[in-house]
Image (tube, rainbow, N blue to C red; front, side, top):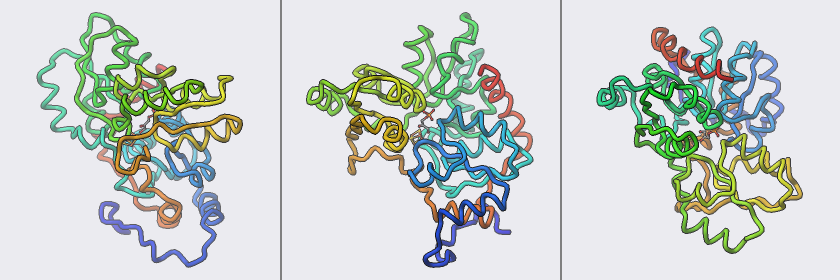
Length: 322
Ligand code: 13P
Ligand code: SF4
């Protein structure tokens, strides 16, 4: 077997004209695999998945699956989290290069050095980080439960929040807790600007603006509702309004359209070259690479056992909070 670090999906080995959707279903059964997909995956992958969710829901699913193989359609830190929770299972990801700007810009060795300036602080880390950073943390959070996780820390304890400074700022506002923020950011959500979202809002006063807390404060303060990907979907399902300006990664629109075919869902314009608000890492996964991952059981996530057990503790603290 090729080492996962050296594995390159051989797209030319896929027979021409193969019915990828049917083959993926067949391989999923043959491999006794569960297919977990984040809301930012392409629509076909979401439709094939056994479970589609946000980071918290996916880690909860990974914690309770009895499948032999987890095919994780998301980014590396998500698949790695599934492996931390399931050391005995094979966890494969369609593209090993599916990273995340938050995780990639916070290497564990540099984070450890940065933390030296904050002795005695509780370290709350957003799940968008490597196993190495998780291992240095007191507790993990996702955007769904970050407020609850921070509130679970005794008031007298100082807190470091990493690696997303915008989520950290938003949580700080919600909880009234002063926190030291690591200066990381999501390259997708930082592309939404106050100037362009405000201009769209002025053109469409009938639409509610909804935003992910990874957005800059100037954008989230314009929003009628701020929440995690799952919370944004819930909001659109439950509200009677007929138009929503959506300031998050556009992959979520697939489930929003299914839930509210009667509503107009307007992607907030990203100030990027392509104007598209798509996560380039998430979109590295596609049906072809998913087929190969299930066929070859590669590339596989592997983890040093000492690191895994250290990273598991703060993750279990989060899961215990519900
Ligand atoms: P959630 O899945 O927690 O909403 O986070 C969004 C995100 O950017 C995932 O990488
Ligand atoms: Fe990371 Fe942002 Fe992509 Fe999510 S959307 S995986 S936070 S770069």
